[in-house]
Image (cartoon, rainbow, N blue to C red; front, side, top):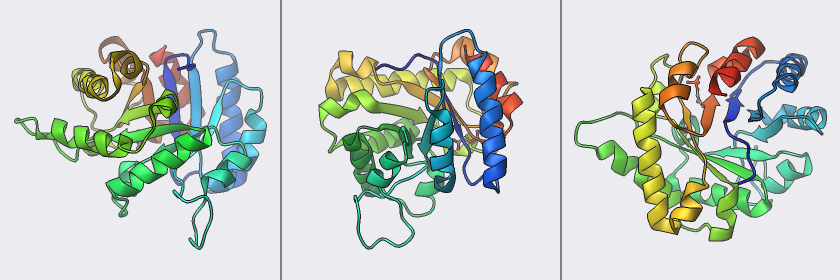
Length: 253
Ligand code: PGA
């Protein structure tokens, strides 16, 4: 894995409401990131209509631009969809796959697996999102996350694993202001890496970055950075403000 850790990715979701605002936010983030002294990897997952403009601005800069979703087929009669060749053509470096908000819109594990395969095959990086709806005492949530990962990776050739990033995002912590504790994130990271070790051997598994996502902000980032032992963060709400997003990045260093 060539990424310099920590990896901090902003997920803009369906924001902001104009290209002008997207360019302004991106420019503000880019300028702040350029001033960082400590190496790290920063990415922004923007709405697809803004990607071409933003990837051009990001060329040669310390920031990656990616998409929030993709269709698994390279082309076809899929009204409203965007394919991996299209995203690659406009310079998208990575794609978020299986975000819980997309799963809630009907995306099945099968779709997630197919999309993940399409992204990795194209040579782009994939941020595979996994996470339970709720926690329980018996540890059923671990099984649930384990199955999400196993089914997503089922058809992925081992040689493509080097472009995989996993984001653990407990659904109950997304956009709610509630977050998992750093210990929860740490425990899940260990669980994920153990699972991956069984699937692909420890050496490969240890190279897959595991991020935490779910209401990460400038107030809780320090606790995560100190105790969670994750490789980075997927940041929603707090990535829509350049100042706040930069504080999260700095806190993660
Ligand atoms: P949040 O979103 O930081 O607003 O909770 C995280 C995500 O959905 O990736």
